[in-house]
Length: 124
Image 1 (cartoon, rainbow, N blue to C red):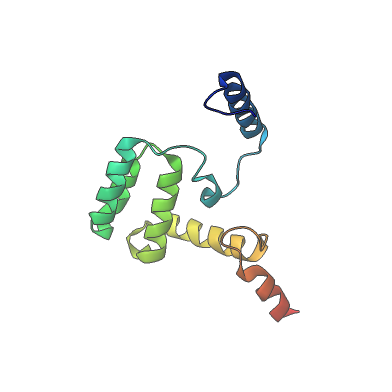
Image 2: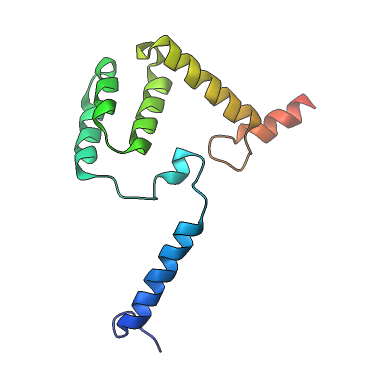
């Protein structure tokens, strides 16, 4: 029987197959689905801790220092959901429209679209 510990060639074939499969996949459209695509840089982990300990009014400045685009997007969304009043008007408006569009037009199987099918049933 093949074993990862005793057969380095088998291990290498599995790694190659895994990488090849990941490269062929289309990128996920939503940040919730992308979060496990790569590790978060150590510096961003420290900034994430600071983000959660900082007053809402100062959190947007910390987001600019993050390297990981996924964390920036999730951080902006968190500010939008918890304290939309600290966002610039144009950012808040853009995020409101994006959220409404995702809830109404999105696939109910996608994250954040669970109400879509229920909404369609109530309106028909």
